[in-house]
Image (cartoon, rainbow, N blue to C red; front, side, top):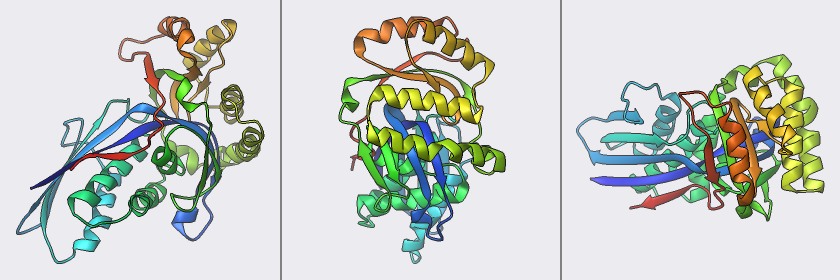
Length: 305
C-alpha cells in the first residue's frame, strides 16, 4: 500500500485576461491577479497493486460526486503505468465551498497530481506534475490561471499566461501581512463565462489593462480597487453581493466579488478583521458563514509519504 496526502490552497481571482489561443495547452492560461488562502483541498491517494485497475473517488466523503477533472488527471498519470494495474482510492477534502470562487477545482487537480506522482513513484518534478493539472483544467474549461497561482501561493500577479514553467508570476511582498475575509453565498459556473462571447469580450476589455496597472504599482489597495472595478465591469455583482459592498464602502473597506462566485471578499490587516466580519455577518445566510483566513504563501505541497 502506498498512501500519500497533498494540499493545495484555495485561490480567489480578483481580475484576469483570457489567453487561450495558443496551440500548446501549457502556453494557454490567463494574466491577472489573485490571492491564495490557507484553506483549500486536502487530497489523499491510496494505491495498491491489483489484477485490474479500479478507481474510486470521493469528494468530502461522497462517492457519488461527479469528478471529471480528477478522472482526467488519473488517466494522464496511468498512461505512464501502462503495464501495471492498480486499485486507486482518492478522497478530496475541501474545507471551502465548492464552486463559489475559491479555485477548488484547480486545488483538487493540483493536490491530486502531486499525491499521485508520489504514490505511483513516477519521479516527476513538482513543476511537471503541476503542468499536468494545468492542462486538464484548461481542457475542462474549469480554470486558466488557478493552478499556477496555487502552485506559488501569496498575492500574485500573473504577468504572462501559461502553466507552471511557462507563465510568469510576481508575488506582492506584503502577502503575509494580511487576512482574507469572505462571505460566500453560492456558485457561479466558470465554464459559462469562459465559453460566452459577451463575457469573454468584457473580461478582456479590462483584465489585461488592470494587470499592467497593478504591475506598475503593486499594492494591496490597488489590487482590491482593480478587482472591484473588474467585477462591476463584467457584471457579476448580484443583489446580495451589492448590499454587502455598500455597507462595507460606508465603513471604508474596499471589497469585491470573487471571480467566479457569488462571494464577497477583501484583504485587511489583523486589527480591522473584527469590524469587517461584523459588517459581513449582517448579511450572512443560514447555510453559509463568514470565513477569515490567512494568506497561503507556501503554495501546493505533498504533506507526507
